[in-house]
Length: 421
Image (tube, rainbow, N blue to C red; front, side, top):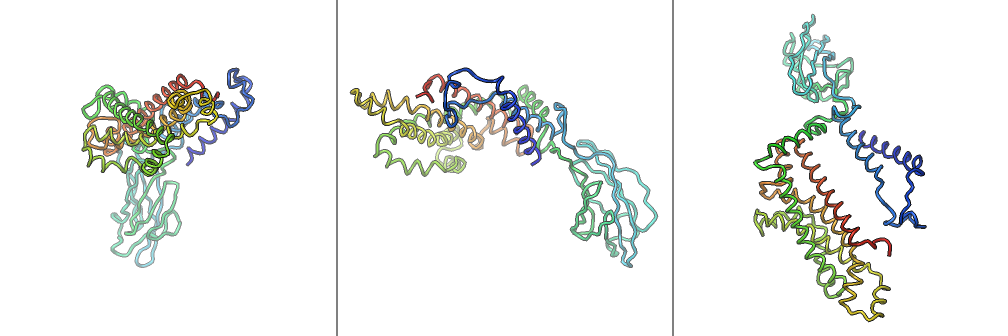
């Protein structure tokens, strides 16, 4: 939650700085600037490049700060390492009490220094020593070296002077100490605010993994083969979905018979997640490439159908009437009125469908895939190789974003009238 609040604070501060402080320096003089009404006009809204850069830098800064990265200048408090101690009170069966101290050495991750040396002390409760790694906990069987053990009726009644019983937890300066149900102590040193590398590695670890896999490959295939096969599957599934979905959407938008016939099917399948179709696809198409492409085809089909249908429904009827009054045939109306005016909706649907396909490729490659970005992610997750998982996610996101940029450029080139008519 803390990184989220920091990110929101950066967003708010950047918004005020750019919108208020630099507005005059960043005024545009183009088609959009000539409009008298811009609020609510989607064509007048363009991505603020400064905001994009600050957003990416903020995410990178938070990632590095909360993973102890060497690439960022500031860090969140990390886990405690070094020597610490806490005191507990033992009560014997006769009611007598004695204090003892646990001396702990907390080692950095990957190191294994022994427990510290300590004098046993004078009373019937003797001092204890333990060694533990950062982000881990250790069980302290405090009575192993005592004159009176738990079997004799001894029990811990206080930690750092705070009364405890079985199941109690006390936060000390040395860390968290819990009395287990068996009367032993479970000691966890302070974890700080940084993430453990097994859950979230620092950026340099992910970059190093990219370089390593790009050079040596992963699971018998190069990185480029993995990405190439994922890209091929996504594009093949998307193209097939568009080739079927766009004509079907046009038919549903132009014919009440097609609308009535296919509307229940489309509306029924649209909310069904592609993941739910995996068992059925395996039964129908097996575990080969055909099954993966069919799953991605179904992921794109319904989105493209609805986008094309919405594009037809959104054509201004005045344009159709004007074409009829000029003597246009139905084919000419379809070719020169409906298709051009529906293209913006279709391109929007295509961008959504491509995103869904990229999100589904991981599931598609669960079906006995030997290569692919999704396959890398799933295999790495089984061995808790978080750096490989994050690497795969970033690469999928970068490629998906690149495809989206290409589709935006194609839309700008093929539909230059979007937002102007």
